[in-house]
Length: 520
Image (cartoon, rainbow, N blue to C red; front, side, top):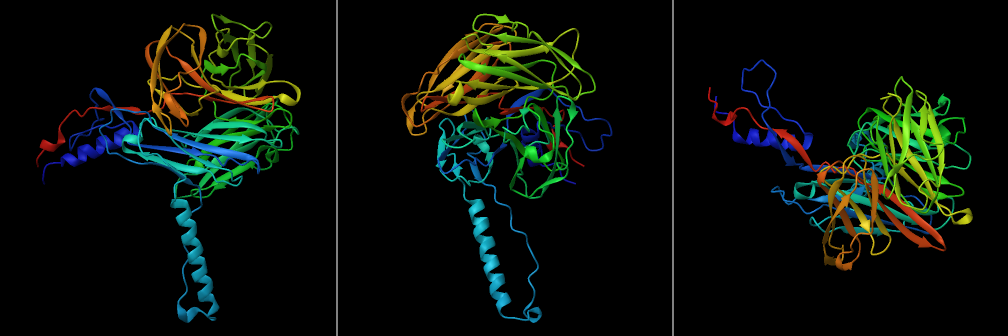
């Protein structure tokens, strides 16, 4: 028996860079593997899913793909977003002797040609990123544009981000709809949806894999579980997307609904498209995983209505303190300083114009000794009457080591930074433009318990759009959100995207032994 090849160790380390875990043992070891000191290495593969934009004949969608410049020594790699077209089903072709009519051959040939065309369409990228540090963009006016499935490898994988932004000027889906394309998972929480008659909310499920996924959707209102006629065992075919109108899953019309998506087979990307007859529409991204303390950053200063929707998924009720981290201090909204959330029930509270004319971020923390995990999101409205526009801010994790958001414009981009604990310092990089320009870098100090709203320095000589990357340099955790505003006919159309840690690096335990020197 020869010594263990060095390539095996290299392969294991590469796997660890993707999965986040690796351990080494010598042959014959019966005990639990022991890992050495962990090192942080860049991931070698990333996946992102963008939902079908939908809209009308008066809508336009921009896709932006971006990977921050890094120090990765990996392969050059690729980063592509492709249409989510279901893979053709392979069928047995009967022999000539089994065919009774010559026309059947022609039908089979046509079917094969159609399948080949379908596969070719699925293999053609909608957008391809050529290099890190500079975004790539693509546009479509097709209201039937499909969901996109993306993979990045090599140097383009660590921190890969993509943004889908749709401007819709007509109908109940009117508004600026933005969503950061996200990775596949098996569990999602969406507090803030609705089955009311004035709402048309869809949950979009996208399957990135070559085998079908099976998902379950549970709905929870203020009185508990909503009776659902359907919602269990939803099949999402391979490499395809399925939209489900939430109001068709139950006969109960409820204003505040928490949607829980899980998979029993495979994995999916999930996001909710919420449309309000009066206030327009936007995407509602999934809340941060259930936790006792949650942060929702980036409430605009001119918000005319802010509604908090929260849910306690466990067996215990939750009591939380409701606080706004404003420009200079943290304070509790008058008469709304606490919220009781019953187990398995959705709670909603209207905070009205809680920001008092200043930008802010909402902090939910345990009250009266309660440590029950919850999920939460904000429904934010700007404007009044016929000039209303809506956006959603889900609870989000901290920026951590690094986070990016794509599709920023020369005008209309605002970055919100909040430090719920200690004062922190962050570095903000505005990338080169998609069509040209030089990146700019600026450092900001965020005082503990406050929210700092900044207008990023536009890259010098900017052409096209750019990306923002936030990196924590010192101090406590920082939560961030980007607001993009595009005025249209007196309406401040806007969308808000949060910036959780991009997960561009993972801890890889060092090997306790060099297996390459072990002989038989």
